[in-house]
Amino acid sequence: MIGAGKIKQYSNILEKPLSKGKQEVSLSAFAFLFSELVQYNQAQVDNIAELERRLEDAGYAVGARVLELLCHRDKGNRRETRLLGILSFVHSTVWKVLFGKVADSLEKGTEHEDEYMISEKDLLVNKFISVPKDMGTFNCGAFVAGIVRGVLDGAGFPAVVTAHFVPMEGLQRPRTTILIKFAEEVLQREARLG
Amino acid sequence: MTSTACFIIVSRNDIPIYEAEREDAAQLHQFILHAALDIVQDLAWTTSAMFLKAIDKFNDLMVSVYVTAGHTRFMLLHDSRNEDGIKSFFQEVHELYIKILLNPLYLPGSRITSSHFDTKVRALARKCL
Figure 1 (cartoon, rainbow over the protein chains, first blue to last red):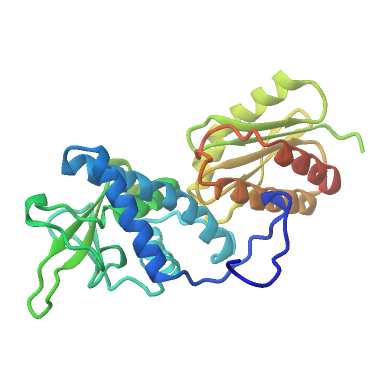
Figure 2: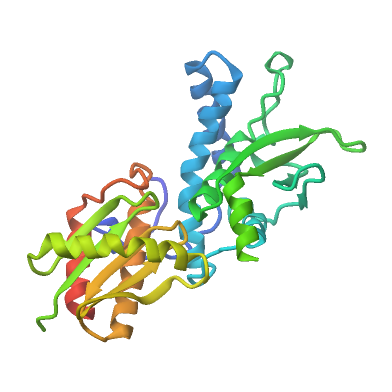
């Protein structure tokens, strides 16, 4: 039987406490599960854009839940109402809970006012995946982009979030950048709030 | 305690996903609560707290609102002045809501149909309000 020891059986999920739990999940288990997720979706679509969209949608569902759970558990019931607030929430709290470390960097885009980038040298979901040449610019980081979009959308900051590979000199593998482009209304509201 | 109370949970897209009544003056109560939604909209962006206290009055009934991180609004129509009781009621329902939300088969923004949830909310209402 897998897992010795008795766990208290709850008759209903609503009775179960919202504790932090074990905080650690097997990396190989996750890698297998994620690779199966990608393969399952790959078998169902005929082009890369659709595959990225499906991964993003899977991540969106995670993001919506992560937002509510973390604000309740880690932030003592404080909501984020400002742009920089929600970005640093994603960059530190969300990343720490999901990947065990804060994101490598958070930058503001230079060309456009509404663009921000979160970069990661070695994104967990891309760690064990190599993309064949004929798939072009496909990036499994679309799953993480979906998570970020779920968090931002849930908090009231609609944005278009995409994942890109950025080759870096000195590193064997390119670094992954999550590009966040906020909708017009977010900037207007930020300006209004001062 | 015979105070009237009506509790609804409204999703981000202004669709009610859960309703609970104490008595049966249903239509009027829901109308008042939906009318208060505009006020909540503006107020939510001015503060980072979740509990927004009493935001609207109608005759002798008050509307209290609690906004979650995902902009789901818990709205309570009541005539009592017991603020602490109301705050703890909202916090307990918030925990229940998060547990419902964590279900991967629950679509966020859809109606909450769990009868367990309903039973627990009513029990909490009797206890805290």
